[in-house]
Length: 77
Image (cartoon, rainbow, N blue to C red; front, side, top):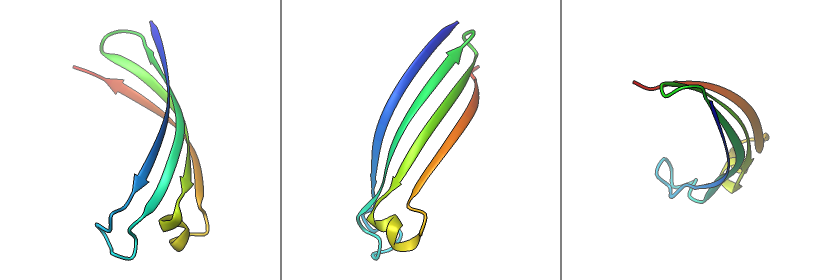
């Protein structure tokens, strides 16, 4: 059984692909993941992430920041 913990920080920038109105800083995300592997074929991943809305998100929404938790079951063959 193994445990791997990873922290991450990402930034998303929109270069106007969907609309020329939204061409700038979209959001940044700060998160942590814990991966539990019991064998070579299956594992469980738990994650927590905070997404901080950028200027593009603030133009369209009153909810600028989002937080979520997740559980993923991974199976490899």
